[in-house]
Image (tube, helix red, strand yellow):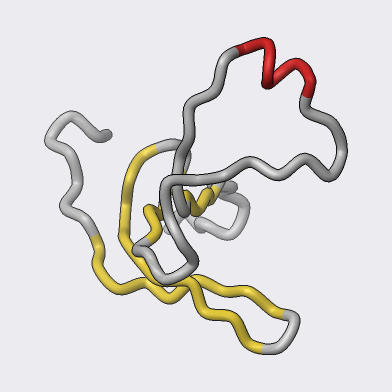
Length: 80
């Protein structure tokens, strides 16, 4: 039976988005603050290899940040 121990998946958590002109992006530097259309209480999207797989909430405990999975999303019919 094949093992999944060596399979890598990129996980991303998206709290919010924003739009800005390219000239602003080019001027961003270290420590720049980008305002999002969301707050820390909003639901986050959880992506696996850039595909939406779940929704969750941000949990802050001391100096640690985590994401609690609240809902698994159905697989797309064309996902293989």
